[in-house]
Amino acid sequence: MSDAAPVDGAELLYIDDDDALARLVSRDLGRHGITVTHAARGEDGLRLLESRRFDVIALDHFMPGQDGLATLGQIHALADPPPVIYVTGSDEPRVAIAALKAGAAEYVIKAPGRDFFDLLRSSIAGALETVRLQREKEAAEREIRDANARLEAVVAQQKMLMREVNHRIANSLQIVSSLVQLQSGRVQDPDGKAALLDTQHRIEAIMQVHRRLYSSEEVGLVEMDRYLEGLVGELGSSLSAGGLHHPLRLTAPTVSIPTDKAVSIGILVTELVINAYKYAYPQGQSGDIRVILSQAGPDRLAIAVEDDGVGLPAHPADKRPPGLGQQIIEAMASRLGATVEHDPRHRGTRISVAFAI
Image (tube, rainbow, N blue to C red; front, side, top):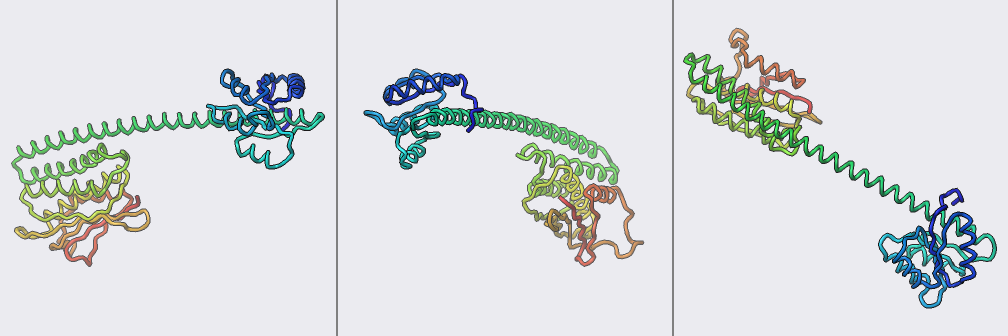
């Protein structure tokens, strides 16, 4: 360590029973701005440490009574002790190794001449520099912890606000759904009543998304198995209440996807299920309708609605003209960046859409 390291203004506790050497150390270090306080015994040094704060300690190994290693252990038992430079007249490596193992920052071998003072001053500078860097590191770590804590608080607040927003949206959609239901009760025309009920189902598909969001830890993601379970359950109850009775079954893995994709899938499933309830089976005949969410490849999912009914018309002339439901299905598939696929090999009707997540 060079003398460029800061030592001016440092306070050193020099613990050594050699009074003459202590005076020389004090004189030499004083010329470099270091204030030296001398203690002739380890016990005296410990008492000084209890009453004053020092920047660094130089500790002799051989002293009457309590030696340097014993004193070093007691120094390190204090709260936030200063760094200790171990000073010894022995050049045996075991003494230096024992001191370093006991927590000394550095060690200096006593030797006559200028070298001892230069080495001691350099060791002091090195110890002070290490303390400075350690304190800067601890301060930076505290700042990082504080910044992370503030960020976590902001994120938690945003999540809470998003949950509240989703809660309010779900409540508002529930009101809209109830108003549509009331309106459908006043409509006498069967086609008009059916159109209003279909609109109600579409609203409820979106409402289900926001219900899941305000009860989820991830406010930007929707757990699709739970979402589809709630959606299919409501669709089944509502359509059965309208006189259409078909077992509605769901297969879905545990997977979460972004909100906008979940909304598109919910509306798409709603339209396909409504179509299957209306057209899959001849009147009076019951049959399964299945909603299946599955993995379609790396980072891809597929949603399908299938039945074992009469299937799609075999000839274009027999096809029903595309209505609003079909337009909505195409629009939702487009939002997912996908196309609607019909499986001609399936007994009945199977419509699927594969999309990236």
